Image (cartoon, rainbow, N blue to C red; front, side, top):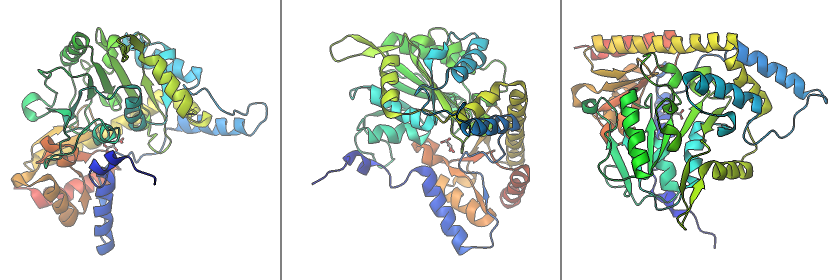
Length: 411
Ligand code: MLT
């Protein structure tokens, strides 16, 4: 008789965003005339930059000609894309990252989950609370945790609260942890980490032989010139960090799929016999075995982000969403709500009014304003009493949603 991976039974019934979609669909079915505005899942709404589309169209044409047709590409990504990324995203910022250390993939969600395959089962793993749920759920699936308690916290994980009290940046743990997930600009709180804060994490990781998984999917939204875009801007980070990046949020590739993971060649972790093993080799082996690369067409589209037009167009896209975030912040503040984030990130983190629970506020907003957000508690116990509003939508929808909310909730 076949058996299942029982770890899946430890998970909450649904991943957060499908669960939200389920509730919203039920509401929409019962209220077919409601004009629902979705500011829940962080999915982009604006069209792909023209430079990317043009490059992809050209690549499609190349696929139609025997002379330029491409079959399997390198599993790690095409060198021309990896080189552009290394130069523009890292070397231009003083980070010593070589193109060969960059692995192109179809998403940071996949990579932050898949990376666990190259690590052992006995690592102590720390996540922030609230947290992007993928980090937790993939550890549960991999059997790295016990069961959840009634607050939804999994036995075996170390939770690092990020709250208004610590400026939504995780306090360095007093105990030793082996793997640490950090995401800055932060999903869901929209907070950023200063150089000093990241340096403290890197120092901690080096002192303890830990590896940091640094998710920089939202780095393009950083407006504060003092805030690092890559953790490799921090001294010593090459010795202890794997960084994840994506084209989803800067260039609108959520439906097109292109991302990258940086594994410095000098990065090592211990084998069972005590020897040091290069993580680059293991990740390269994993990717070569289980992944056939991102399509040539999509990689050409991603490459175009680094052209002059691509840079101007992605900058305009980001400014557009940041302006949405500003509108959300200002309107909700004027309505008397406490808001955080939304300055260096496309997410605004809101304290729920009248001490409502996150899901009660979700239901209230959905039913009384027909606006969808994301309940903070869906990101972890410390997110209870908070609510995330995404700036990814049209200007018209964002303004309309804020009008509805401020009319309903103004004191
Ligand atoms: C979110 O809403 O948190 C996003 O969908 C995260 C993601 O890109 O997967």
